[in-house]
Length: 232
Ligand SMILES: Nc1ncnc2c1ncn2[C@@H]1O[C@H](COP(=O)(O)OP(=O)(O)OP(=O)(O)O)[C@@H](O)[C@H]1O
Ligand SMILES: [Mg+2]
Image (tube, rainbow, N blue to C red; front, side):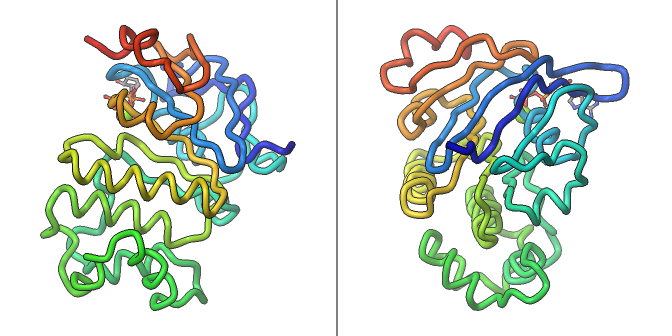
């Protein structure tokens, strides 16, 4: 089977500092892989590197069997990888509608995308004219997720979506992610520190420790074995 996303021997980092070493992992279509690890272990660096924001020092990245290692971020996005960054990367002074429109490829219609994302986040319909910067923290996270879902990506990269959210919002997001996996067959690489949330919806996990994958396995029943990788 062709993997949706395949990293082979990937090393990456910032200028002189190598942060990720020899990362090999795959995500199949319709699969959620949770990448877990403490602060500063390289989780966000991994997603930035996949998206092409950081130079790859070694190794390769393939999307549905096609090599994308050297492509720039806009090409990678257009080829089918959607990215929900950890920081609230919205245009704060633009409206909800404008933020959604900017994520869409040229000819796509906002109304169509909106119908699609409003199924997961109905509140957005009533907030189209509100400035994104005035949404609550949880609402901004949902808008970030909606923006990623408004393009029909095969792979979804999600960076600590549960951070700072109340349990009911986390439950809602878990439902949206599970639906994206099952109904749309998307491959999801989910960065998390919330072990309960991650293992509940993931199929497999990988633990990142100081830039290296130190453990992988099926998510079911893994909590007790890997909790020490996350507790400070
Ligand atoms: N722009 C940058 N320039 C130099 N070093 C950086 C830069 N961004 C991150 N780093 C370093 O890379 C390492 C990994 O950072 P990264 O943001 O990937 O960690 P993380 O696992 O996402 O942590 P957190 O859970 O806190 O989000 C850290 O030591 C960090 O200081
Ligand atoms: Mg991070």
